Image (cartoon, rainbow, N blue to C red; front, side):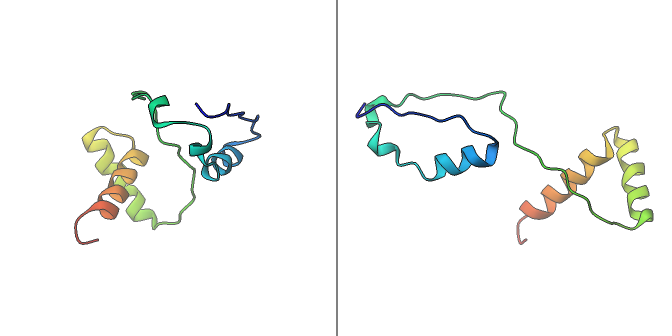
Length: 89
């Protein structure tokens, strides 16, 4: 270790992200200082949004979600993910 890293208290997640984005860890750590770690319970940060969709479409999504026994908002997220990450998109 080159010199100790002092991590400040953060007011929010954005402030912490800014700190880490602008930090050059090579000033504080040597490659031999690193260890392999795993975060099995880490969940991605989510953000609420508001969208307007036709009522008939929302009703159809709710019907489909009920058929397959999943929450309709989870089904909407699956559809969006599929559309964003499908080949050719």
